[in-house]
Image (cartoon, rainbow, N blue to C red; front, side, top):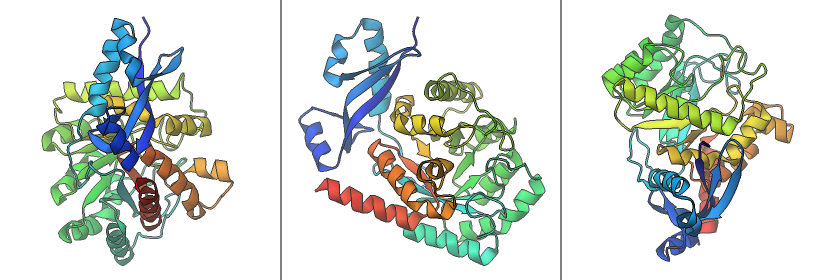
Length: 351
């Protein structure tokens, strides 16, 4: 029997969306009238078909039941946590790399004064949360020791938390996760999808802290060597379903969970573009979605801009598209420029 997936599509944004919701012509995403949709795409491993929301009632009973169950998750209101406000999208997760070798800004902010200044600037520019990392997970990078990673971030984490800067911790190691939680970080962002360290799920259960599940194929040192998918969109959707089932079985019952399809983590250009184009399929899982599109390789591949710092235009273009698909969180390096661009675009189409 075919497995069915629901992707909401044909979105409306701003004042026009609100008017259509009030007339019951569209369905609001997460109970936010300012972004709504009037079509769904029904997918299987062999087919896909778009239909109007008004035609769902005419579907065969089994398919209709599945679509309506998905729509309940899609329509569900998202509870705020970790300084994110899900009534307004997208939220911004600002990037603070305390590494000498990150792909975009390695070595730029790994000194105390520069790191603190940058974190404060990111917050002032509009970041809801600052994602602090001490280990590069760019393609080709190798794992570092726990002690080296902690030494890179320890003092800065303490200072930023003391100054009430809201912090997310970007790490794959359970001991560092636990230390960060005890310091006061508000979110754990594990790019390995909780796979790198078998004790991570136990720590997350013990502390009930919000966390990100990111999809990644392979390890950073080998993830870009011939990544293969049967269907990258549905394979990653199934990965999230299995992971949610696993963490529930381990006793993690809260819903303060964010899903990240992992753009660039074990994906080639065609995989990344398929994920971005069809990103709204993940709304039917019922959790907020995070996308790390900032300065990524796909922008270089499409624009031929080799320097990562010259990819602001591509970051902004993809951020606007993702905002129009209802994505709740964007992980961003150039927070000032991207928040400005999103704000202007939002005002233009909302009047």
